[in-house]
Length: 237
Image 1 (cartoon, rainbow, N blue to C red):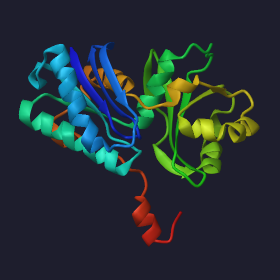
Image 2: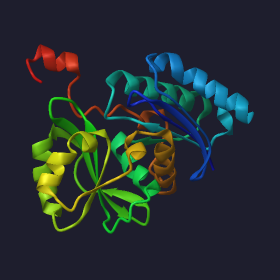
Image 3: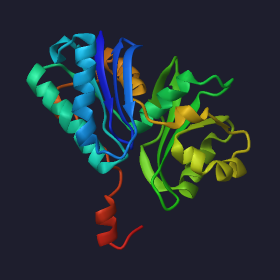
Image 4: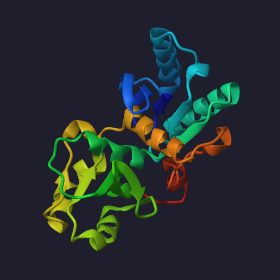
């Protein structure tokens, strides 16, 4: 099946086309322009390069966050419009689950099946997802959450008998603190800490095979916390 996958939840605007889990093309842009300026031209370029139309796809896979509030809204709105026009189903994938799928590309000799995805949320807070790798599919073990890094490490203490594999820019930022609490932790290679549409597409493929997909109503942004403006208004960090 052919999949159009996008991830606009971080500062990187990422678009990929996959045949099942095989990447046909991937484009990433990381610059100062907004996703609203980048996303549609990237998709148009890919469609032209592959001589494809939106109706040629069997699935749209979209990152719904958490991450950039504006970026997530742009990505979700775009895929919703595509679904409404084409009736192609869509898979909703959290950016934290997408990061977990990044670990499949790691060359690290990983003896664990516990993966913790961490996205930096500033002021020592992180977005967190904890997953179990079962035959290269990631099963969510805890509710996705936004909390202080210390609270997250307390949650992870129940998995302390396992070697935990960490991924994401939050894991990079808090690596020393993580190692203080869990000295046998392991971390993916640097390039795998970035969110990517390829992993969102692979996760979407697995969801489609399980029947976990739907029409445009299936998509909604996953924020996990208030926006910066809302937090400032409420006097929060």
